[in-house]
Image (tube, rainbow, N blue to C red; front, side, top):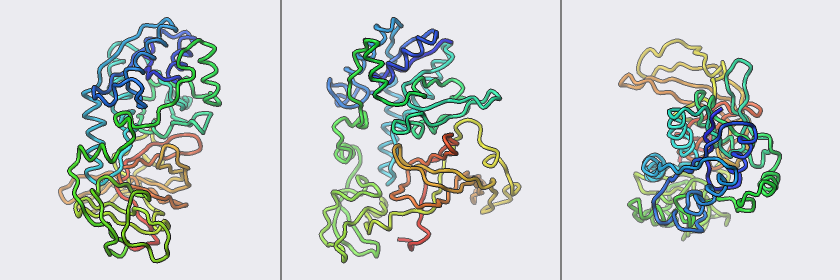
Length: 393
């Protein structure tokens, strides 16, 4: 096969490309230039899109004896990932930029261009597995090393995209083995540290970065009863579940820490309360996509057509595991798809996930990814979450 290897400049993508070459594929390496902002183009930045990374990717391709190119996707990245990040925080939501990057850049823009140029697949260093269901359809599954598993951030991949996705590290039992293999192959990135920061905020100061992009105004921090307990410099810089940096002037009656329960950008308020009130029992998600073909229950329409405004039709309920963070623990849940007609006749599709075990700190804007066993079923962007035990704030 003709394979386009996405080379981030890290050890994982270098070893993935090496394995694709060793498997006999015709491999071409490409590094994505995702940003022209000075903060991410300085040598030594801890992001994943630096000049240093580009040079490391070139050295890896040179060692493997494969062609190397740099493709400039900076404008699309700025619009589809960076601006989306800003817009979501401005609306009081908590986005996942890595999820958007995989969805709109690495497995949309990149794959689209690769297929147009005659490549059969895009190869990356993600820890995840693509399995054929026996009928020619691809399924996305967790990697062998659950500690490094990245199937969560790949939950946005569609059936068509999985047909052209290759993850050579799928069965690798540990990151240590990847580094050892890189050392044996003479790849200079064998000991290169992993990047953990948001690539376009290399100093890790998300609140400071947002303050330069979003109009911030001082407002009230209130408790669950609505009483003012402090002030904030801008509600948009907070996230649900946050404990540090609240600087509350009024201590809690029980003396215990308080956490951000809700952000209200229109009122410019941050609501705080005890940790127990972070537990959510129900999630509603929008922008649903299925990683491969949807399971029969999710595709089934069991209640007929939407008849008019306010009417609802549903899929069958199905058991699953729900995960809301890249390295969070999945919890058992029941889920179904609902189609609701709005007053203007528009049919709205939502994913309703009822959690058997409550999840803490679920925030609108995050992504809920559903699993059955190791298989990724699909994902949705969280639009709302609620606790069945606590009253509405």
